[in-house]
Structure formats: structure tokens, C-alpha cells
Length: 140
Image (tube, rainbow, N blue to C red; front, side, top):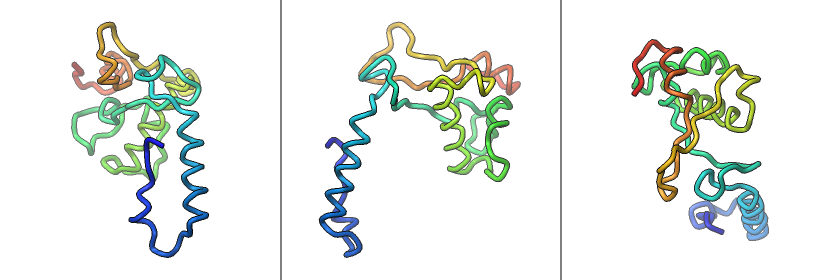
């Protein structure tokens, strides 16, 4: 398994050896179904992609709100600048990658461009012109 469980840090007497084996089996089972896109595959039914919530925000601060087209899908009780808010932004971008963009009223994410280095991976994000139009902020 490429992501070994840090068992010594968790073995406080609450979990026995049987639980540890079951947990490692579960992790291996989950890991087997996912592919890192685009490093391991161009597309995958169960993909791990890299996204940064900042790419879908109105400005360049952690506390900035997501662009309107993304923010309308974020639960009202989440506060900009918090990890749960940023996780919601990432989840929305993942849903777009999974083919739900049209349902959410969002454009497809920008995929790897010609000449990208596969060893470096790719950070998926909304097209810059969409972010610019939704935020009123200049995007490079």
C-alpha cells in the first residue's frame, strides 16, 4: 500500500489488530479504484485531481468569497476563509470534473495544456475568462 497507516500513532488501546487489518484492507480497496489524473490516466471513473480553491475565488486572499457561479452552491452556514468553505469549493470543482458542470451551470475545467510536465501534474480550475467575468477581478 502506498499510503501506510500510521498505526503507532493510533494504537492507543482503542483499536485491536483485527481492526487494523480491516482498516488497511479498506484503504487498499479504495486506493485500487482511483487514478491520479492526469499523471496515471487522462480520465478515470474514480479520479484524484488537484484543485486549489483560490483558483475559483474573487480575489487572492483565503478569506475571499468564491465567484458567484460557484458560491451559489456553497451552503450558507459555511464562512469564507475557513477550511470547510474551501473544501466545498474543491468539492464543487470535483463535481464539475466528474461531468456535473452543466447541471451546476459551470463550464468544464481547464485540463492539461500541450507541453505540461506529467511529473508535475496539473491543477484543474475554471477557465480564467469565466472567473474574470464572475468576479470583476483580473485573472492572469
